[in-house]
Length: 431
Image (cartoon, rainbow, N blue to C red; front, side):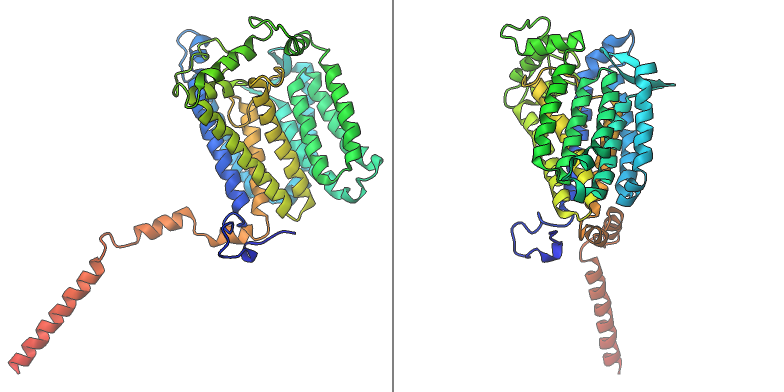
């Protein structure tokens, strides 16, 4: 049962924490700080690669491109945060169909990058449709599972159309050889079905099938097989298959508690591949130390708290399920990326949300955060609390409208009173 702000005791230490707008501010604050930190680290970690890209290239090239993506994503995220939940339900099918059509074109006419054919070149723009598939699938699953929530105890209603369409989406992504994104999509689907209330016995069966499917897919690409076998090997070649993981660990180990200082990384000097992308967490740990990596983990932890609050406090099943799907996607991808960098998982090539360089991933993730903010604004009592608080412009105008010098009005009144007293004395003396 949702707890409104009015029901929270005034004297409670957790009164402000249980405010109706806590989820809203947690989402905006944590995502904003991650975005700002990501831009700083992209600038620091990409300068060497930008210079070596071509003769006469600017060291700020990759950073400026990432900043442009952030500028594009901000208004889109703002629009997404202002759209009502019913709008997402109404357009869930067109959004999913459009994303899948783009993804369908990837194996046919897509561009191959690092062994994966998961990019489309649309004129001067290069996009990754699988990122759009994540967001569209999350919204679509929320719509479908909310309508069938009372029937999800039966296998047939779980399979049709939810599981079938989800597996088709994953299959289209895997057709381009992108195993990492395929795993993230499976995590997204699991989050949606878990929040929807699918029985755990079905999760057990699905988990076994998913593990078997992932193991089978790892045998498709030779480079992927080599990386996974190297990960489980006792004597992995640190100059070949385990080179990237080893260099990432060197970076993290060099950082210590407080790091070597912003911009002082050694691994970014062409030692660590994908330093500004998949392995940016290693550069962050090298330059900002354990304190920097701890800050990133804490910010993702705040996002997890906000996602949990929206699911628990909101009354709309569509919002709850979609929030669970988006939360599983963003937080699951972050955990997988960090686990890869610290050597707990083999290298599968997925970026750190809101931090790593990459336009499609950044813009789509920002829009997804905007969707969550829209849902947080719809929590019981949140809209009223936000409307009752004065905006930034009104607060600024109120400050500007105050007297420039304290006590100026009181001094003027005293002078006028003194003049009136002197006139009265003069009239008495003259009379």
